[in-house]
Image (cartoon, helix red, strand yellow):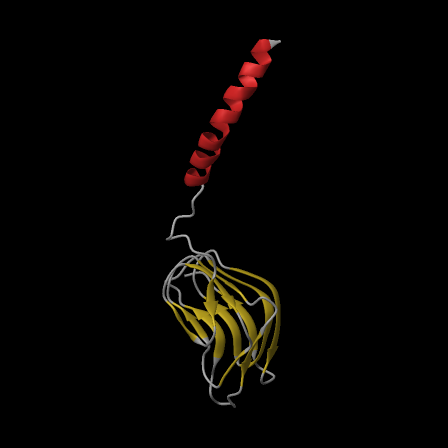
Length: 144
C-alpha cells in the first residue's frame, strides 16, 4: 500500500514540470500569427490568412493578391463596387503567377468582375456574387 502513495507523490511533483514543458512546446511561432485583419481595399503581398472586419466599398479594384497561398475570409461581410460601365473593376483578383488562393464566406456586388483567380489551386466557397451589369462575370478561374 505504501508503493501507490509514493508513486502518487512523485506524479504530483513531476506534474508542474511536465505541464510547463508542454506549454513551451506548444507556444505559437510568432510568424504564424492569426488571420490578419482587412479594414480597407488593398494589395495583399504576403502569404497567410486574412479576414474582413467590416464591409468594404470602392469605385476601383478592391483586393489584389500578389502572393501565393492566401486565404481571405469575408466573415459574412460584403465588398461593394460603385463604378459605372465602361470602367472594369474587380472585387478580388489574383494573377496567373499566384497559386493556392482561397476566398470564402461573404458577398460581392457591384463589380464587373466579382472574383478573378488566374493561378493554380484556387478555391472559392460560400460566396454570393451579384454583378453591376448584365455581362458581369461573377467568378472566374483559369489555369496558368
